[in-house]
Length: 393
Image (cartoon, rainbow, N blue to C red):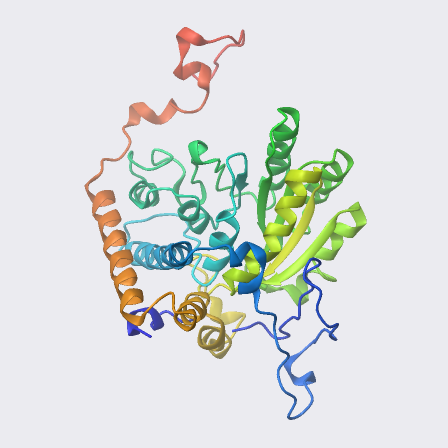
């Protein structure tokens, strides 16, 4: 493996899970509560080969390489944005997606023309996965006028309506009712599609999430609620903050639910294909919990060594880094070579550097722009239809 790809390898939270995928029957296993519960000398449980799932078996060699490329591009973009933050080029918050790349890439690779995505503040990976250009993404981090939100949103507020990507939201759990609304719109318009509403494990205890679950089930809406469970709600472990299995709560709202590992892009795609198909074809909501891990803190200003150990992070990097694992799988399949992986990595690094140069050269918004992009009516006075007074002038 090229050293360039190995260098960012950041463990499995204690108690690695054997997850249940409803459409892939497997032998029942006892869920482990801690790694110490494994009998001495016991062989590790054999995980299913998800490359054989129909949705993955149909992938061409080029399509598999593209999945790998997208994951590497996200990793290198995030690393470059971190360096920019450390150089004080970026203000405010910066929530990095390093370690979770297989989740966004696996999910978004399944999008059809009428599928939509909405997520929380850790949104850079999803934005790249849906096809956004990294130049305006980096410019947005810099607060520049050429950013995807014209420099007014920053790290937590990426948007691309042309790609059915609706943000980037900073209020914990606030995007889940909006994602439910996207699903309602699809049903209202008679379009065969699904909304993927992503949230972190810290959002599942928000009341708005449960209200959205209730309405989605009552109204038979085509939405998949995706919990990206990286084990820590900011600095609080799931064990200390949330009772029970997070996805299983969906059963209380008569929704199907599933769990899978998030370091294997094949497994993510296999799980999500089942539930997206159900949403599109049967107009039914569901919840999927994807077990993943972030290498950096909640934000880059977060002293994460106060709530988890370095050895925990390094163990995950060593054994479950999603990019390393997928690279190894593709090489074993004869789809990828070490040299080709190195070229992909080099191109991703160059792309991230160009995005930073673009951001550096771009202008800041002017003071005159401060009231633009607030209300559509004020930006388009000749087409205004509302009768209200625009009082903020």
